[in-house]
Image 1 (tube, one colour):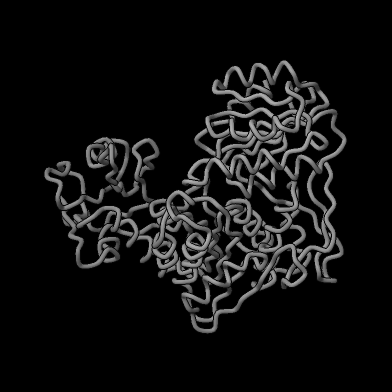
Image 2: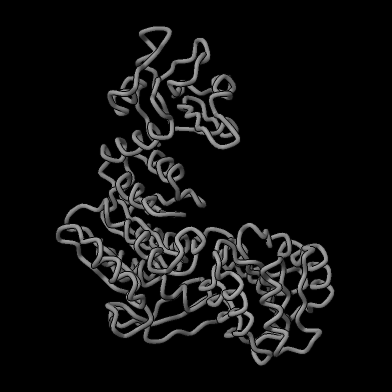
Length: 465
């Protein structure tokens, strides 16, 4: 994490910052780490009071000081900073947090890999970090810290000795990824895919592709851009915006026209075994289920090869993958019931991928789908949900349980093909969990999938209990 004196941090923040201290000795106070939340204050950290719609961190600065914070930023338009607490006055605390991260990043020799996409960002982040981690010292985005606050905090967590940082970049509108790219200045960037997430904010997949392509805006000349070649909208967005000088490109995907593509995929209970169009890899394995995750792994292979990881290191890194939770976790209840927990988020593309995976898996008694609302899809949300319902077949899955207002559209379409008792729509999560729990047997398979706001992990926990 960042370790600088208070005076050095003031210099990093530039001309709009002013150090206000009780004594001259305060200038030499060593700051170790940054915190924006008094619940996670570490001794010696710099407290950054952010301002939101329903909170103002300045109200908690004294509490932060009492818990061990060594100093704080303080926004100029706020009077009465805590007495005795060393303060750096700034025009805007959020902008100052971002500037501090940008300055710190420039002082480090770290090489940064930026990742964005409608789906698969976190999985690909984990895969890239695993591949690079077989050879180098790597830091990756914790959890979902991928926005205008989370990414600066990720950069400020980097150690001086970190060789690679793998950072996730999320967005809800135009201009957000451009900001993140200029903060991180990634040497290599990845776009996993263009889906329907954020249709509510952006209105079309074309506009989503333009927003994702902003990731190249902060890249240096000669950087590496790795992207899903199955998606023509990426190429279209690149042509519209122009490219950094000397940008190198590698395309990955399922189609044979890509630079990297799979030639064979076999799945078992432990994960996916696959081969690619390169003789140096006889067979690769990832402890993840689903063809879409094999495609994500191709991006990690491309990054590993570009930065000098050996084929053996790449294969070992993929095998040793440690995943962020709730991305198709395969869980087993005490009864023997198998649960695929994919309750972290959902879009039409990721919903289709999870259903395809469930249909492909063999060796189970019956297959249950528990599908919740897919949120932020805009004016076409009903049709997206009905489309999911129409793709379901009683020949490949046995039961469909839905939760939420939009989930009923899935159920309406599925009911046209399934026996009546096999499709059930719920507005009460506890009732869904109770009926599902009474129905499943030890040898069954249950997929749980929905947007984060639906909190379907409660259903998962009920099944496991």
